[in-house]
Length: 234
Image (cartoon, rainbow, N blue to C red):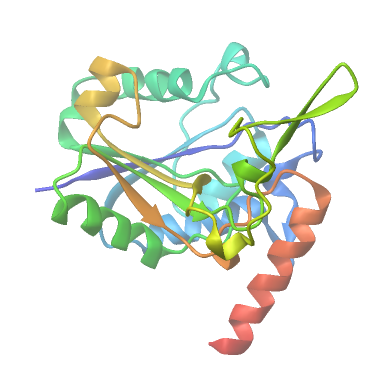
């Protein structure tokens, strides 16, 4: 049986957007979209919100998620590694970690990931006998064969094929990038190998409409647009 522990990392600080995780999108704090998706999942057994923010703690409690204490300062700056945050939360659980078979990392910066995405990704991992799963999105026109690096004020191809590849986007090989929405891994692999992507790692492909990752102010506007579009469809 698969028993998934959802971990939502939501530190207070952010360089790109002040108080990003509680920024309002369509009148609701950003983190709420992830909490609602996790709570709506039929496969996630428990949810941990890892934060140093009093506001995030308050919001989490309104959803019935108890945050017993803040995470320490050394795990709350922009240099803190996600795996270290996960290790900290695992250690706090002690022996009760045995109640879970998998960890799902749910970053609050992905408000368009839904409970349906969560459940389908878990079912995909089980059906394909994977050790881990990562959500991805097609890079489309932002393709590595079109990318450049600058050296000495000159342009060079990032991927050196010896030619300037001018093929249209649809003729280029399909390439994907992590969209940040879902990381799912066997809990023993996380503990023993310190990774969320032990092979075989299964891809969970999501659409661009569901893959907005909040890094800049413009992303908040884009996410709100898609949220309102989805309201109209439903």
